[in-house]
Length: 334
Image (cartoon, rainbow, N blue to C red):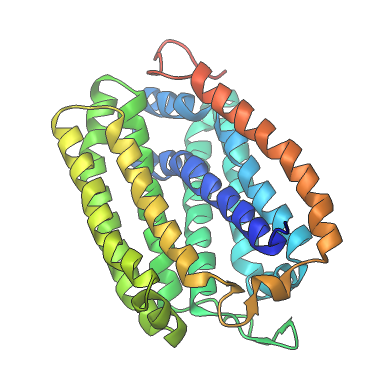
């Protein structure tokens, strides 16, 4: 029995990217929401809610990026030159955010500066992730397995919309996370923010979904031919179900379900994105099999993934279990 190793590795990397989006998304969202919470005490509780897990969440970004370089080197070598600037800006945002997270606790006189840095770094990272996604969807010009486009090809109205959509989506995740993890006035304010943010997210999903099939004929074909047309028809129903769960849970003052309903919206859009791409890794330019490393390399790396991924899943699950429940305002990160 033989396995389709390139497709298996594509699934592993897709899982890593999805794990990053759903896990690091909410803590980026907490940073994006900082301007809505002016009190130092509120911001301390917000950062305390993500302090035990935010570093570990970014492990999935390293795994996804490193895996792409090792397993699909041709894709890595063509995508990176096309997206140098947004990727560099994303990394700067993540670094700035990480530094601000630590320094805001150490320099009380300058805490407002570092609070702004935390907000700017989080928003910049989220926006650039959305632009990177939009640039991949709209296509990258490749000739002879090399990038053949211009320096600014990634900057279009479509990528700006996808960048804004990711910022809104992460903010919605952040608001529902705070609803789940905090109490009192902070929780009530987060609940109030969650409603318009989630409905703005749904509007963004609808806008991008209506736009995408007309970017390239291959998307139109994949979305509206059998069997993927079944999922295209099912997605609005599933999104409506997530919306109903979100709304009814908020009305019942449920803390947990709104967060997972919002996560469900992200998962559905990610699966739809995967169906739009497959079997390509760079849409319209490189297939998974064309971009893959030699089979011997894929087999060797699979042993490493088989050891590392269960370990990452185990310590991630353990961290969330240990720090489950509401944040105690009297305790936290120091």
